[in-house]
Length: 217
Image 1 (tube, rainbow, N blue to C red):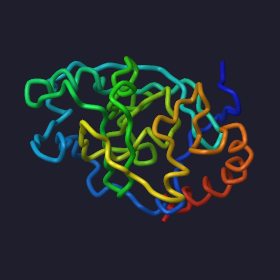
Image 2: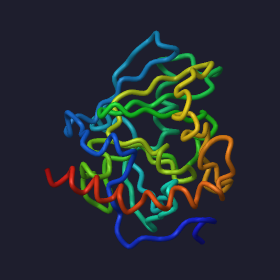
Image 3: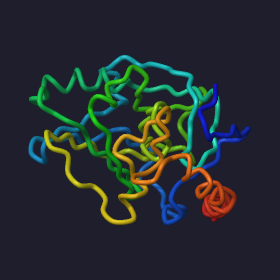
Image 4: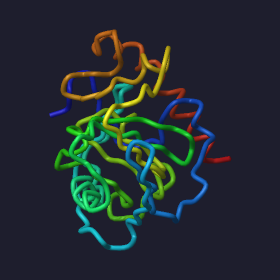
């Protein structure tokens, strides 16, 4: 059942904050990630190494601006499997969450309890095909229980923390709920999600066009 305030689309558009429309990954072939804890120890993990089992999930994608794409099939490595592997390299028992960094400069965060959900994936494939640039090549975070802005595209780095840093301030903080859970309609901070529905809906058509034009260029 589609969540409150959402409307299904037949297409799956490239979408995001307007300032990222003309930003693209610098390397679409590198599926390695730099991983660190509290800014200290660092390792690189390559998802193409086949060190971890691959998984496939079929799930719905919900954009905070109220559109949804139903039944997307993602393949990659479960975050829980990656985290278990990291325990061989890092002290992980007191970690609270992680910040994710994209090749295009975008960043977001999630609490560890949310990341360890069974359907959270580091995906490099969509609907049986290699992940396209539109949807996050070479690698993206897929967290179906959270709005799309937590499902970071073009993933390059993950930083784990025992105490989460302040990631965004001012108006950017308003747009970025710490958890952004779809079932609780956590679209942003300070204003109820059902109110934000009516604001965000006006942005969909223009944003889709901006991202389509950037792809064409």
